[in-house]
Each structure stands twice: as structure tokens, then as C-alpha cells.
Image (tube, rainbow, N blue to C red; front, side, top):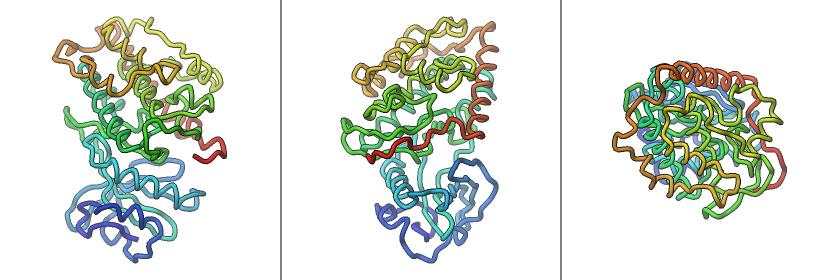
Length: 343
């Protein structure tokens, strides 16, 4: 099925979400795109490069195996609905076309050739607190827009923070909405235990009802890793899962390591306000985006770490990135739906 414009210029209206999957159109993804190399692989999907046959535009094509998805129709339709609602934001990946055949669904999406944010930092070897603030602001703005549309991401992690291209000022693109939830009002609650443990909020881990503020907790964890180079609750990335979960629920973290010496107190206070166990005490996205640190006038334009701590920061961030890649490969950190309570 092809739910697209023939030029590949983008989806039109909300018809795709209502038709896909389930329409009987004879169009195939290969009618419009030349499929290329594999860009990534997950539990249920593979991402391939694609080139539009008419325009020559490069895309990322998410190929989802129907057989691996027990509730494929509902879950894929939900993901398409969410991408249609949110994909026009500058910092959220854009959906162009949708197809399906007897074996797979094909989501033709914006190509982010710059890779993930953490990988770029390790590759460049230099990072300023001002740059961290800019990326955190872009992520927070994307989350705020999503929440205004009634969508909670629920799976924020380094692999889902992509860069549009390899330029120095490439915009951040939030990706992977496979576990996202469209719930309506910001005070509506969810119950399904899902996401990635290391970035999940305490209320998710504790099997409690939760709301959109779980994304704000994840923002706090990501800001910590972005500035410190290691996870706040798992410094070396080797804690047994029960210990990690206990540390997250107890919210045991600090800034005692040498790598924090050259980072502003303001940045640390923001992290503390985001990582509140009680969701009602947690800083909101509106408060976060109004904070001066998120819009630095140049006062934090220095490199985050001095000569003594910079190498340690890069080494730790690299280890953190490698450890996450290994865990992803082993499928050890992906948390499947852990209860049968329907949301």
C-alpha cells in the first residue's frame, strides 16, 4: 500500500493514519524508492536508506516486520498518528510516506545523516556548556510541542537524539515514537511499563500510574549524561539491573566527581529540579524553557571540562555509548510491555 504523494513530498492530511495499515492499494515502496544500505536495526524493525526515484531525495525507511508485531495494526497506526501530529516540529523527525505489503510496513522518514548526538560529541572531542544548553533547549521544545498535542514519548534515550547532518549547527531531531502514547490532556495517566530502564522515571519502574512528566525526568538524566559523560545512577554502566532500578527509585546521585568542577552550579540545580521522585515536584517543561541557562548569552561558552577532566569526560561518554550499544544488541535494556492492563 502506498499512502503518499507520488512526488514523495510528504503525506497529506490525516488520511494516512486512518487508512494505514489496512488499505488495499497496490502501490509498493519500491515503486517510488530505491532501497539502499541498512542504517540501523531494532527488535521489530530495520532502517534502510532510500532514494526517491523522481526527486533523488534521500530518506530513512523504517521496515517493520508484521510477524514480529503481535498487535501490528494498532501499534503502527498509533505511531503513524503520532508522527502526523508531531512531525512538523523542527526538532522532531518527519514522516513522508507510508506503505505496506503482506510482510512489512514501510515508514519513509526524514534522513538524519549526522548520527546520534552523543556519538558526535565523542567524535569531535570538544564540547561547551553553551552547546549542551542549546541541545537541551531543542529537546525540551520538541517535548513541549508533543505534550501540547497530547503525546508522551516514553522512550527518551541517547539513540533517539539524532542530528540532521554533520554540520556544526545541525539541529537535533527526536526520533523513534514506537512506544509513544497519545492520551489527550496533560493530566491523563498511563499505566503500561515500557521504555528503557536507565532513562525511565521512578513511577514507571514502580508500576505506578504516571503522566507526561516521565519525559521531563528523562530530560534530566540526558542533561546529566550530556554534561558529565556518565549516567547519574550507573557511573560505569555495569550495575546489575535490580541495583540500577533501586538507585533510580531512591534517586541516589551526586556531582562529586572531578568532571563536574567546571560545570556551572546553575546547570546542576536544573538537573536536581528535573530529577525529583515526586512528579508533582518535578520541574515542568515550561519552567525549564523559561530558565536563563537554556538561553545562554555566552556566559557558558567555555569548554565544559578543563585539561585534566576533558579526557576523562570523553572516555566515559564513549564507554557509556559503547555500553548502550552492547546492551541494545543483546536486547537487555529494552523493556517490553510488562503488564496486561490496557491504557
